[in-house]
Image (cartoon, rainbow, N blue to C red; front, side, top):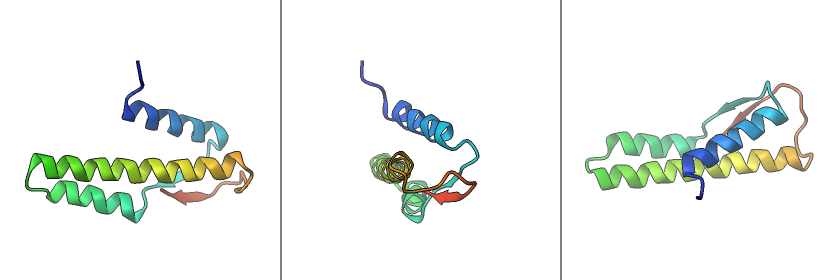
Length: 83
């Protein structure tokens, strides 16, 4: 059985925590804008589309951060990254 989208995101979050346990992560503007659109949505389908976009934006940002760490593009000192 394929893991769900939330399971995949959780796995990526755990991987990032293992790489740099003290790393602070926040949501970027793109993810937040999609979440705001979901809150303001007037129909369930519009809400779901906005939530899907927010999830995809978060996943892409998380992949970018993990890529940097896996390829030595970021140092392991405490720092804050926006996702």
